[in-house]
Image (cartoon, rainbow, N blue to C red; front, side):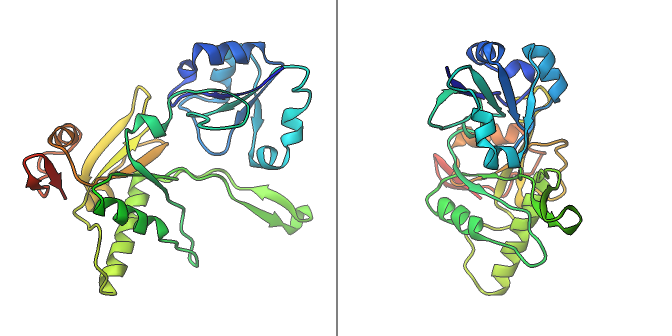
Length: 266
């Protein structure tokens, strides 16, 4: 018997692979991981297409209740569904499309929602190092798992807040604040307000949205519903620049400079 960890892809119910769907339909229990990401359709649509009821697995169940998920998995098939691609695990995995392979070859960093007292910037340093090497950077979390707090009303029980999904506009605003602060402190900047970035939303779905523009313009860019991701460009090949122009407003990429006949930068 097997525990299947199955990638659902990025769009809707029909993005699951044929092998993944077969595994779902023969499993006695099917869990849907429900806190790190979302599809463009709800649980009911998935159940209708899969022909199986789904058990929602929140953060507490996934992190603290593994014994329940694994219950009887040595005697019957159990499926654990993940939006995107499971990427890596120690059991039987059925892969699918994810933001990691849909976005192309990029280095990756993670953003977090800032608070009044906690504003980490380590991802900015990684972006700048990547740009110094000519690399693009994929910025995630741009979807954020739900946080929890301990409530005295519930005798110290963990109470999870609903998941929050960062927008491209919010991510761009964080980067602009870091750039301004470091400029004020006299630091040499590895990127500026004019650095060309690419905002993407719901990549892989029928209504995906892509916008290429200087960073400062993305603050006012509304790409609609989640999930969002942001790419900070490094050195650009002419073909890459042509593709960016297809998803940019007229004149938005005028600040791109030619380094040589086959390399551009911003």
